[in-house]
Length: 252
Image 1: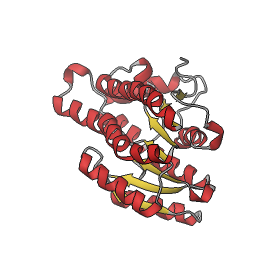
Image 2 (image 1 turned 90 degrees about the vertical axis):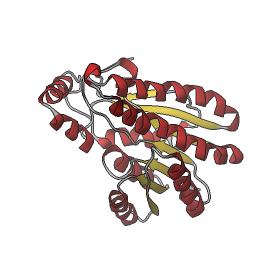
Image 3 (image 1 turned 60 degrees about the vertical axis):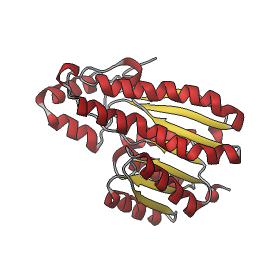
């Protein structure tokens, strides 16, 4: 039954993660809202509960494996089963590679890639035991085609894409699908932070936005709609795929 489905969404407290959480709730999911900012997660919880759905906010540092395992166990304890995992949390700093500090690389890789490994490692055994499940990883078009000023971020997102394809093959025998959604330029709080980080970053983002064939940047709701589809029964025969939500900026 739809009302019995439950999902885990990381980075659920704002931007794309918030929109995904609301879209899943509207589709009948109960949602565990994982975010390093617990107050943001609680705010989204109130929005979901206003829809008549159940939500569980969990403050968690996704770069710490033990914390992730504890959060997944908390979600399982509340909902019994988790049917869909959405790895949405991400972070970036627009800067030429030769100006990057190693600490920046480490943070980008930890939040964007290693956190995906942690959640999958913690939750997939439960899906395998049940013989069904869906994993939807949020990458980026930067991971498909590269992006100036985002070399390490693009590498981490590219790793998510390749990891997801390999994982889709491994999980197919357990009837677990694994897919990737790649947002293009999307108006989120993180994008605004990047835009304000430097004049160069501002100019790059403006130039990229002007190049979008459909004439605008994306919205979190645009991305959430793709995720909600992949989380639905209509997408049960789709796995190992990468879908760009970018207004036509890249077509590959």
